[in-house]
Length: 212
Image 1 (cartoon, rainbow, N blue to C red):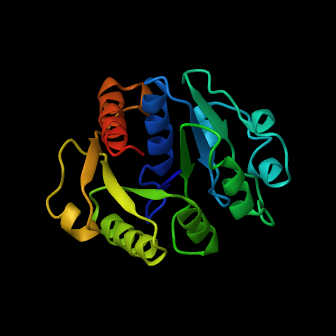
Image 2: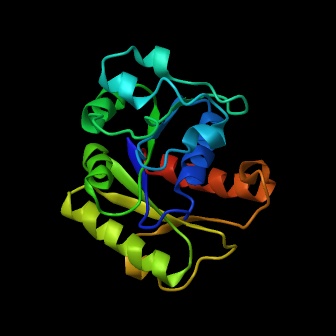
């Protein structure tokens, strides 16, 4: 189970969760994309699936197969939406524990920040993939997320830098992890852009090379 995490909202965590899921799905692996952002859930919107049932149903004991949604354009991928507003009172740790071994790859779209809802998925997952733009403020906040992950003893496997065609200097040193892929700026819908798809294919190859 891999947490897709970053310090700031809008850095590309949700797009990376679904983009990586799609690339892994194309390798004939089963993939679950899980929205653990209880405050700003939007994975279901990007995936074009219903927003219920979701994590709340998982936490309450529903069968996983009854909760998973099939995106119309992604083979091998199933989506578990976050609870809709207000989304409080959900046992996020229990829900994630039930989902941990439900597929070859389970990707968890995490909330930004350092509150309890952000800490829980970092603690519950096996590895963390950082997502950042090259913006200095975003990089600083992502470095805080990396430090928080290491304080929880959850390994950081690397980072993805979005909205750029090249790896910015100093990022690997700042975050103390390798850049696994860069994702270029694209129009809408983002995931339909061929250059973006190639970026996530590169990321998927890096993840698979680490046997994650």
